[in-house]
Every structure is written in structure tokens, then in C-alpha cells.
Image (tube, rainbow, N blue to C red; front, side):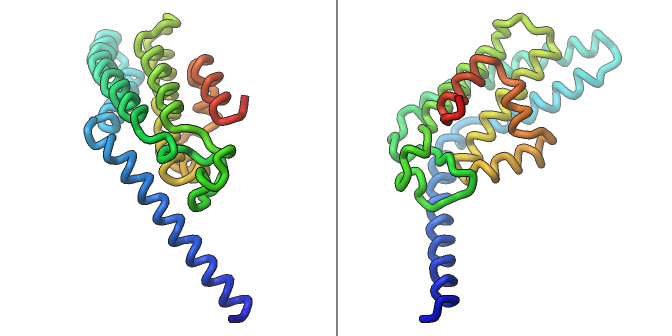
Length: 202
């Protein structure tokens, strides 16, 4: 077998293994997400925040903020339960590789270069709860901005777990027109500090 053919075989094998690993991850996370309406609530909140910010009438704006408050409570309750569900997953089955690109089974081959999804979700759960409870006393616009960042970072973690950090960051930019770095800067200091410590960037 010549070198060129050998490289093709290796590349095809690596691609097959990567696909298998990613399908397992997607199935694992999807089996838990399917029990909730978290993505739908996130979309509703994002749309509602935009409507509130675009409203010229202060009364109408307050009405929209009020409608969003109920959805925030629902999102918080559902995500706390999801985080608890993920916390019961076998630890070895739910680790996130810190390599920027997808490498088949990298979390098992290089466990030191990975972090536990369950701890990431616990951080996101605390961040979302703090933002919704508005412990910092932010005005409605600032609160919406903070909560949006907390939600986007959580979504980034989901895509990172299922695919790779590079794919997660690209999807974040394409879907929300914001970068991973901007989202990190916009979450609460507590979330940012805990998150960076978890992924080894503290």
C-alpha cells in the first residue's frame, strides 16, 4: 500500500470514528433535552427582548417585560432540572475536549485536556438563576443582556460537547451575531470566573 492510499485510509477511519463519537454525544444530550422546552423558551425570550427594546411606547415596553418574566421563570425551572439530570450522567460519558477541533474520543485519550459537562451545566444553572433573580439589581435592559449572554454561553457548551469548540463558536457567531469572547465578557463575573477555571483558562 503506497503512502497516498494509506493516508486516505487513515483519514477515512478518523472521520468514521469522529462521526461515531459525535453521534453518541448528540444522542446523549438530546435524550435529556427532549424532555424540556429550553430551546423554545430561549428563542421566545430573545424575540421578546428585541420587541421590548424596539417598543417606543413605555407602557407597551413594560407589558413585554412582564410577559418575558413568566418565560424566564419557566426557563429557570426547566434548566435547573436539566442540570440535575446531566449531573446524574456517568462522568466518563460526558466530558468535553478542550482541543479546538474534533478529535475522535479525545476526552478519553487525553482526559487531562477535557472538563466535565456536568460541572459546566451546574455553572450555567447558577448563572441563569442569578440573572433571572436579578441579584445585581440591573435595569430590565441590562438584565436581558446578562441573561442572553448566560443562555448563549450555555448553548455554546452544548455545541462544544456535541461537536467541537470551533464549531460551537462558529454557530454562536452565525446564529446570534456575537463572538464567544463577547459572550464571556457579558456573563456575570461569577459565571465567567467559574467557567474559565473549569475549562482551564483561569
